[in-house]
Length: 123
Length: 435
Ligand SMILES: Cc1cc2nc3c(=O)[nH]c(=O)nc-3n(C[C@H](O)[C@H](O)[C@H](O)COP(=O)(O)OP(=O)(O)OC[C@H]3O[C@@H](n4cnc5c(N)ncnc54)[C@H](O)[C@@H]3O)c2cc1C
Image 1 (cartoon, chains in turn orange, blue):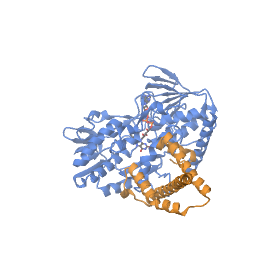
Image 2 (cartoon, protein in one colour; image 1 turned 90 degrees about the vertical axis):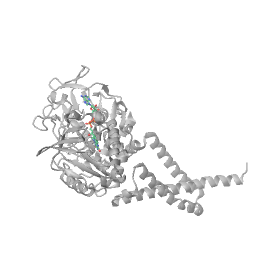
Image 3 (spheres, protein in one colour; image 1 turned 30 degrees about the vertical axis):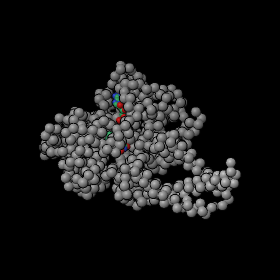
């Protein structure tokens, strides 16, 4: 477990999730990130209304991430012992929060745009 | 082919840098070597499989033969989780052929003898296979018969567990252990006096069953007793001292110099050999870890140490190069190797590059330079949700993989996370020769 390199990290993640699922998740994450960048560039501005909603969703993302990691490892909050444990839990929370925010922002941008589009050009 | 090789070079190259940084090992040259050498590997467990995968990529044209009678591959570190009800038996099961590369030949038989003078191996199916280099990696034998009154069909009944014996036995162990955790009584946990694989595992079981009994509200109704074979709780002094403190904290009673020799299942009595003679101890739950030794063909073929680990049969190798001290064409890898520490899958990960380096160097007529420092690791689960990530070497030094980040002697959730999620992934990546 000592020689950590990008290749080894990918090899390990493939083993954790299974090859198919891992690359599906990887492509999913990249696509969402790309879609997020796409709407930012397309709209040429951050929409503060969408941003507010996506910010409000962040705590939900954080909680979901923590509950997920604790449940798959048969653990509870009582098991969080040392400082490094707190840092790891916070890391999972931050990752969950940011992931959720990006997802919600991107989702809103793509869906609203479509709705607006539909309202402007009723079929 | 190009892509594979490039991918391999990047993984091996970067991995090599990490290895040098971590332990001062000299990274093996990843360039392919052309040869028509006949290499025979005995056993396709953790060690034989990992080695076959790495060798196939290092060597161009070598004839690699793997001899393995078992169709199932067992991920043994998962057995402690099965015996604590945290995983189903199939968690550890896969097929031997799932992990072996297609460029080798697999002989589905057991080795009956090695003749190091004529450089041949004989199988139980009467096949004779000649080698230029031989790697002995058949793991070890669990000698259940050495304990009077014990047999594997007792496991799961009469309050008896024996999780080392495989996934079925581990599941039955959980039946007996969970019944004990619900009803309480005396839980007696043992380990053998011989060298053994994963010396922490008997203790992990004791800690986990203690925790499960506590969670069931039976802390006051259970007494956990751990019988150590000598006067310490662990072979590495600093870890032994830490375990002693944890035992005190949990109220686990340590019995020193108690070696299990007989079981009377009807009376629920275990007999221990102690310095003061035999002693009978009553139990409601007994966990048996039997004496361990090399498979019979090893001492019978004259490959074993004769003056060390007498009667256990481990292969007489140099502890740093894993090369046989009398037969330079022979190496030993994994549990069967006669070295002071290193009977874990984590050790195998560090042993494989050393054997590869010396074997490939020998093929091109040079001396290898890689050294195995005794690295052994054993995530010691101290309760459900926490573990200590202990790693050490021949000299009883702690060798933490994440110094300053994951403290080895602290009970941490992160270390438990590693045991639950990362250990199997690391093991499987190692089998494929990718770590
Ligand atoms: C309960 C338990 C918990 C463990 N926990 C950990 C842990 O947390 N971390 C860790 O790193 N390690 C752990 N280990 C240890 C680890 O599983 C072993 O050290 C590792 O599997 C050793 O690899 P090996 O290839 O030497 O032996 P094995 O993996 O046992 O493989 C040996 C192979 O050789 C074959 N064989 C046997 N005899 C012959 C013959 N005559 N001819 C041909 N083939 C033969 C066998 O069928 C087998 O497939 C644990 C082990 C147990 C039992």
